[in-house]
Image 1 (tube, rainbow, N blue to C red):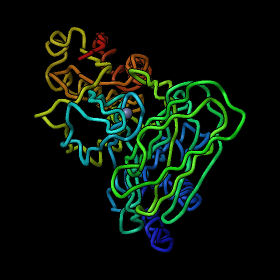
Image 2: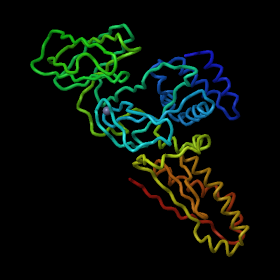
Image 3: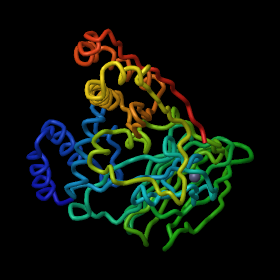
Image 4: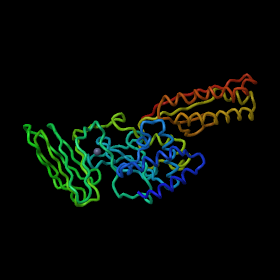
Length: 378
Ligand SMILES: [Zn+2]
């Protein structure tokens, strides 16, 4: 990482009107204290640490950094079974419906909520490690071992293994194999020696040991960096969001106002439909608007509707929603949760008391919103 260049770029980002200097300091400190593997794909939740409420602000600064060429934005596609990064979209327009995990050798449907994670990395001008992005297996897979072996090195570790079937793999080189632990338990330490070959293979694809202690050794003479993860091969059909570390989902990012402001022109490919499992769509309408136009006249009624849009749009944004479109005086917006969708118009009631209400009172007219919310699955 070119530290001086990074410092210079961060200093430039701080000059943006409205930039949060404290947040940029936090990002800079995190980057300087992180390992290169963590920087391959930066999860804003990791930068936020315990302060999860700061994620939105951190993401906003990353997004401005992407626009300024300091960071790159990634749409990582995670395998629903082993969680490894199977692929990525360079842009929303590149979305596809299906993906394939080379570790599980299974095809799966892409879902913007639980399979697409948005991450950042430093622009190649600042750091170009030339490594494939990796992510650790979630705790539910009972990760037994994690080795990292630089070029021309040998690393080893001893693990205790119970009967079962395990998968050993390197997410950097995509090498993999199966370890069977069977038979009677043994007291002595058994040894496994693996070699990372050029390309995507280890020298052994299947190994058998007895239950007990096993010393696993990995030698790497071919790649800049190789590694080994060992976890149970009994993988769940679908890892749920609760089983995964906190992360910024694709659908969450689409609802961030800063994303819309900076990258609003990027749309999902129309050729291929990426799946969005659950999203709340809210429709609102002004009750009796025709009568309002008749009673108040076009200009006054139009001003009320315009005021209502202004307040309502801000409220939708504050509650993490996204305005999809307006139809006459009706609003269609999407939210990640039902709760947020219900709260957004509530705020409008509070705010409208001091803005649109006086106009209405004069004519004895009450602005009322009818709203429905629908949970869509497709
Ligand atoms: Zn997989």
